[in-house]
Amino acid sequence: MKLRSRLEFWPVSGVFRISRRETREAEIIVVELEVDGELGRGEGSPNVRYGETGESCLAQIEIVRIDLEDAGVDAIAAGEAVEFAVVARDAAGAGIGGGGG
Image (cartoon, rainbow, N blue to C red):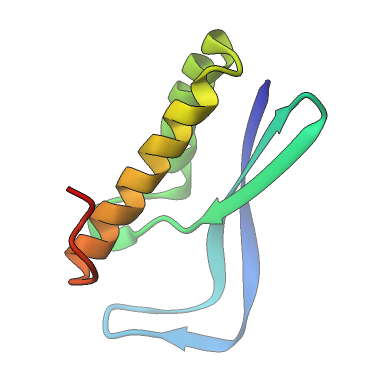
């Protein structure tokens, strides 16, 4: 199992503007998980409002990477459970759904 992550900057069509700032590019964390030749990809964007940066997100992913690679393939289900919990937490914070328990 291999988990790789990197920081990319994706151009925004025009200008993305909110009350706190405006930007012409999006800072994106790209994650790839490879198990037995199968590759999965995901991406997310750090939220400056909560003090996240591309570098801080990559550092957190590195901690998880070490644990996952040490645990092997059995850790995939645990990783999925954590991902679903994060999605449920975000949804609950946005007032969507019940938050998953």
